[in-house]
Image: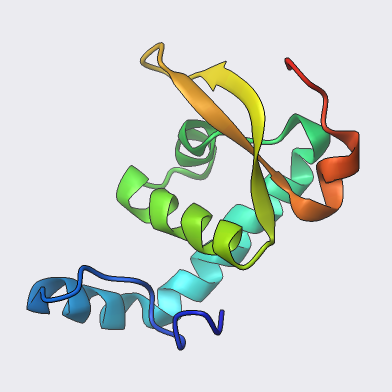
Length: 107
């Protein structure tokens, strides 16, 4: 993850956010890989952030930035597909980039 210089993104001008990002530097890499592997395993069906949270037992504050980092470096992408979250809201479906040729629309 060279885009962030090895440090997860944080709110500019916020000392607490910057410190939290520094503390996450090591764990963020392994969490990214864990989330990426999960999305890869889901193949063309992909995964929503809510599914990742539930199945990997992670909090949204952990999953959201890792998905964004994976997206920004081109390892995953958002599909046009949506699925319902546990609370009934529509959620974006992510797929691993190597899985994109087989995306099923409307799944």
